[in-house]
Amino acid sequence: MSKPMTISEKILASHANLSCVEPGQLVEVDVDVALGNDITAPIAIKILRENNIKEVYNKEKVVLVSDHFTPNKDIKSAEQAKILRDFASDYGLLHHYDGGEAGVEHVLLPEKGIVLPGDVVIGADSHTCTYGAMGAFATGVGSTDLAATMITGKTWFKTPETIKFVFKGNLNKWVYGKDLILYVIGLIGVDGALYMAMEFTGPVIEKMPMAERFTMSNMAIEAGGKVGLINPDDITVNYVKSRAKRDYKLFKSDENANFAKVFEIDCDKIQPQIAFPHLPSNTKGINETGDVRIDQVVIGSCTNGRYEDLELAANVIKGHKVAKNVRLIVLPATPSVYSEAMEKGLLRTFLDAGAIIGPPTCGPCLGGHMGILAKGERAISTTNRNFVGRMGHPGSEVYLANPAIAAASAIKGKICSPDML
Image 1: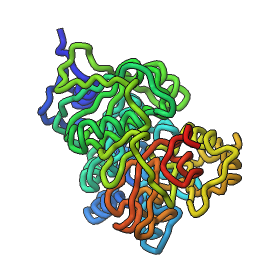
Image 2: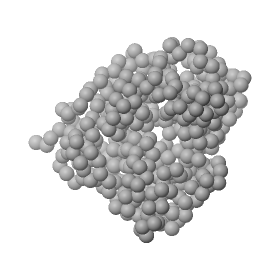
Image 3: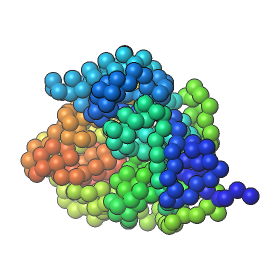
C-alpha cells in the first residue's frame, strides 16, 4: 500500500519520477511552466546570452509577460520590455505577452490555459503561488533559478511540510476569499507558514468560485508559504476544460496524509478584513477600523483584478459618485477582463462614478506607476502588500481589503462597508 501524501507531495513525487516524497526531502523536478516578467526576466536572459546558450529547454514552456512597468513609464522600463521582446523573437518563444496582449501575469496564464492542474510552475515573481488554486505546485524563484530552468527544464525543492486550513460555517455578508486569507495571515503572521505548503479546504472552499480561490492562493506568500494549494474539484475542471490545450492531472491530498498543523476556522465569526499598515498580518474587522480617511482607492492586481472582482465593485458603486478629493483607479487585469467589463457595462458604471480606468498593468501595486502616493496620503487597495513605501512615498499608508470594501470606501471617502453607505 502506498504512503499517504498531501497534494504538494504527490505533485513533486510525480515530477521527480518517484513513488513518494517526504517533508524535508530534496527533489529535482521537471518544470511544466517557467515564467518571467519585465522586471525579473532580463536578469535571466542576460545569463543565457552571456553563456552563449542558444535555446531554451522548451519554446512552449518558457513564458514572458511584460506587466509590471507597462505601458512603459520611462526609458529604463522600455528597455526592459525590449529585452523580453528581442529574446522571445530570437529564441522562438510561443508565449510572449506584450502591448495589447499583455495582462497581469497571474491572471493571464490561467485564463489562457497555460498553467493547468498538477503542474509544477516556477516564476520569477513571488505571487506565482496563485496557481495553487488550480491544484498546481507553483512558487516564486529568483532570476538565476529561472535562468537555470530555462536552460535545463528542471529545478530543485526541499519538499515542504503542509499546514491544513479547514474553513467551516457560512460567509457573512461582504466576506469573500480576500477576507479569509487576510484573516489567516492575521492569525499566523507573515512568517507563520515559512517554507510550508498551505492547503485550503473545507465546506466553504468547496463552494468557492475560482476567482476567490485564486485570491486566496495568491496571498499564501504573505504568510511565508511556499505554495497555497486547493484540491481540484468540479469547479476547477469546469474552469480548465475549455482552456486546456494539453493533458493535465488532478492530484488530491489523502485523508490520512501527514499535516504539520491543522487549523479549523469558523467563517461565521469573520467580518470583512482590513490589513492596516504596514503588514498584511495587521488585520482588523471592518467594525474595528474607526475613522480612516483615504486619498486613493485601487481596484485591480493579480489578487483582485478579475472580472468577478470588478463586477462586485461596480455593483457597490452603481448610482454613486466617488468622494471629493478621492482618486478611484480601476485596472482590469487582462484584455479579456477589460473586454468583458466593457461589454457588460462595468466600465460605464466606473466612469459615471468618476473613476480612472487604466490598462491591464501591475502599476501601482508595486509603486511602479499609474497611482503613486505622495507623502502623508492613504490608499485602500485590493492588492496584496502594504509594506512601507509599497505604493509610493515611505510616508504614505496602504490598507488592504476586498473589492466591495474598496468600492464603498471610494464613495464614502473613508474605510467602510457597503452597509455603511
